[in-house]
Image (cartoon, rainbow, N blue to C red; front, side, top):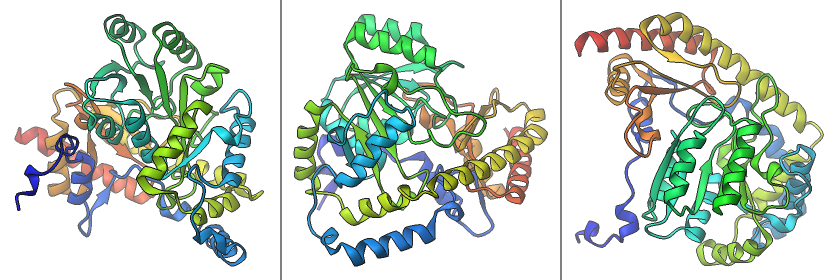
Length: 401
């Protein structure tokens, strides 16, 4: 059969991920990868996860039955208290507003299915997270790209779009953004909230890197600054601070949306695995969890420092420009005249070093000169050798062009 002729229009809008292409190219023996935007396996709290899983299964076999569509009540209550304790929210939102998801990506897909239809317009940071672009793009939306400045999105560009367009929402990764590593200042968030009220649109705040700060905690969330105005949908995740394979995230939704989200969950997948939620609860509710967070921050800070040092020494003299990130996983930089996509392929094939080209993070034109490096999984000796390979690849690539 000619299966491609049977795909619906949503499937035909999907495109291959350039990140997956680069990760495939770099999967051979002897390669060093700066590609994966995921936590380091040596930092997963494996013993605690194992003991929590065993204890949950032994003491509560009902976790193998169907569960509530919104997710485990105990974990939802813990998240609600955590949001208030750490000032993610201005007050305790209540477990009734917490909707558990199969990672943040599933939350983005729920938002797509609940709020988007073909022809809708959404504001996005430019650059932005590629898989969010894929999720929203499959619905046939039009992206309105807002350039990122030092303090956050360009307000003038944003308001120019808003004066001419009715938008569904503004999608933001406000803390140590993927890919740029930037954070939106508190003052800029206040201005964006004023625009949201004036032009009546939602803000989708995707915040998976918030706990991964190195020197000082990040600025206040859109959620906390919005207070009683329920126009912010907040997405959080345990993928970056526990383990991504557990696929456990959450959304903070208005009460009036929770019922519909639960109905959509039943239509899509009935429920999520309660054994995962109860295991995660035992991990995060342990008094030692704060020490785990301190440990991963310290380790990622050292890996950031190592890569920044190597890039400054070996790539900056070649014309590569970047700003050291204050948290998260990524170094994001550019070089005038560089074709990032072609260079990334060249470096992977010829020097066995993997980086991600910047072009795929932009919804329109742009990004050709940019590269993203992830330092999360890179040990100090790998960092040095990897950047040496990159510098060699860059010299040879420029010479052969």
